[in-house]
Length: 98
Image (cartoon, rainbow, N blue to C red):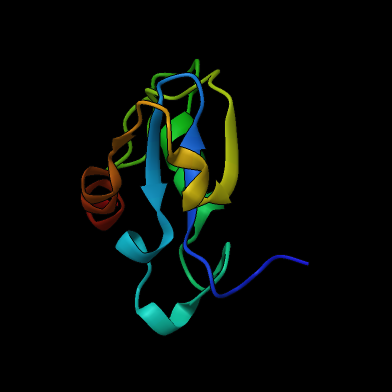
């Protein structure tokens, strides 16, 4: 059971940054707890961790600056008492450029 009435975030535990579900979802009604219809946390992780040893990288995608990092998805309340940076807007722009 995952409460759908709470705001969830994807945390990059290595870089100490997070992304809010409500900041990059197509519309607010697409967010139900940690589940996001359309582009969700999974697509963000894929975009940010993309890495290829080959010369070719798809247009709009750069080599992932989060490759090799650790992540979790948790309610926003878990951010309290720790230093975290919100990078939701920057990641939303990156997703929009793909």
